[in-house]
Image 1 (spheres, rainbow, N blue to C red):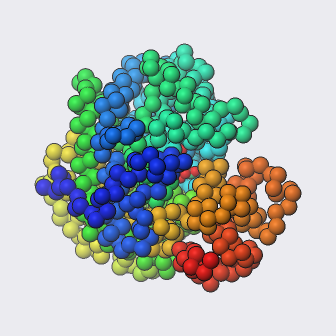
Image 2: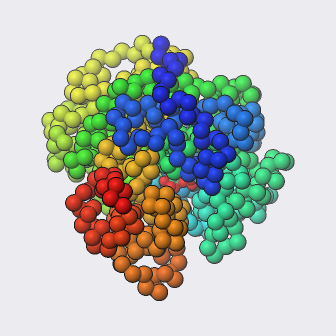
Image 3: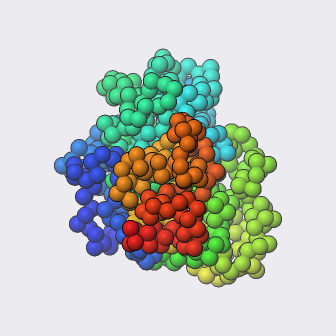
Length: 599
Ligand code: F6P
């Protein structure tokens, strides 16, 4: 059975530990470093992209080497997970006065919602009270759309946490910031540290503590690093907890939705499953559970050919300016929504490029703010919305991907697949079943699809099936959307070259990228970035003295900011000329290469 199959060795194997050496991109935290394994991902065919992603993901489970880095499977990490699981148990004993709050920004906040809802469902099934809540920076609209600005606001973070936990006597707060960087989460952790009688803070992230962000946060005296230092002190007496293994750099530099998101899901599911169980929390139990995800990773990538075919189909649609739609059921559908929503800040995508729809829409979600449909087209997320708004204009150039499992309403899947098939033959499926499941109806669906990835999970996985197939689906979707954007030319080497510059972290990342690719000085690059944001060739005194917040706010309305700035830096041309160059060569990667060659 493929569940335990090991991945193929890839030719870049020798570089697998390079990122750990002290002189590899020493000024960057792990979560922002570029991964040596994916240096040429922008030029690779789909099959090689999948192999590179597999190798990057496998780094999550690598054992601790001789370096400073704590890893996912380190002894200390497992012990911390055990301690946090015991804390969750205390909350379960006193549901009236206690609460668990999961929180984060962007994908970290979406996963906080995803898991809080899933854990509550599981608790109710086990006859416990649902004690989990979530807070996402930017509120529920950030669940499906890109809202990066609130990430910069520590006061807002603290206020939201205060509000959701009003009146509770004991709160376990889990703040997720993959890069140990989001001021929103720093504000929440600080709030917990100032109210230790009620709050116990847990920080989940993927850099060592000394690499936490040191940049001052405007309007307050905190830095993320200063908060982490206080937490480290309290962690000695278990009054705070740090869960921060290094996972290795992301396949696309800084894209924490990938490994960061996956590891967040793994860690919290391992902790919460252990605490919900009626058996004692044990070291081996936690370790085995962590290892089951490693097996699931290998199992997922044992379908690499089919994943590559999906990636190619999605890439073809984006390349010709058409759409990719994920139509999902249950939690797999929700993962589709999450994957799609991150494409805008990462690749400068339009919200129409990759869209997710989930069966049952908001009824299925049970989010804090209820039905958001009236907020605009981005918030139409049900299959009915798809049938009304998207299906009528679907062509063979649009790709549709069905995401479902044996336990979903397969008749409904078949019905929708038939409707889609009437409009396009470019329909695909990713389907999960367990060894021995009868598959008659699913065969009918397969016949309607031009490709299907069938994950047949072995019986040994059945205990944790739900979480594992979600994990597997997340890996598949991340691969499909990343690969598709690579084919569209939105990645240069392994950098997101057309990222949005909509908060301070993204602004700094963009400025750094410009420096790296142009070789110009920090101040020249920042100047070019501002000129691109404000669409001017000369910076006025007014612009130069505006706050970073004003810059990122203005950048939200602009397009192709980083490519524009880079063209200007490399050629010395005006913004207008840079715009026309990019119009002539809309594939950003090609435009960058042309400029680099001629510079
Ligand atoms: O600012 C946008 C973003 O980079 C998202 O892409 C990401 O999901 C989010 O920030 C959260 O980042 P972190 O978990 O590191 O705080």
